[in-house]
Image (cartoon, rainbow, N blue to C red; front, side, top):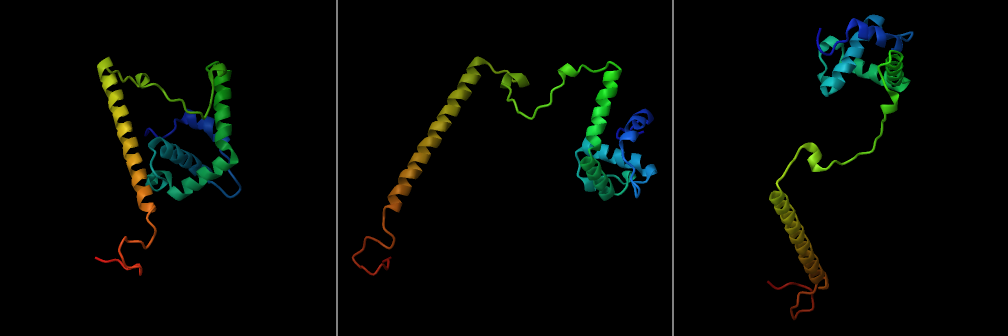
Length: 165
């Protein structure tokens, strides 16, 4: 059994949540297609890179879309949570799903710098920002000077607008 395949016990739990319509999928291919979906999200690969053992990639992708639109995965998740709660294996007071992003301090990732190194980095960043602002001010000043010269004026004596080289 490969890592992407479900155990028979796991498949026994998942199978009742997967719909079998009047025209398909064929029940004998249902597990193969579900395992193809698992493979896709475990590997992070593109649908077209799916191995042939799961069937045609387009079929597995279409089946995934149908299951997604029908709410199969939500029902499966609720079933897993309900069964785990029934067994006493989950504390729902600790569950929280949120889409906000929280930035962690660099120390949270294990980055430790000596005090002198951190000060030097902050000083270098401040100097780089000052140089960037000085360059921006210089560009703005240059733009104002060139835009103040009327179009066609070349500072020469001729008034025809032709430039003398």
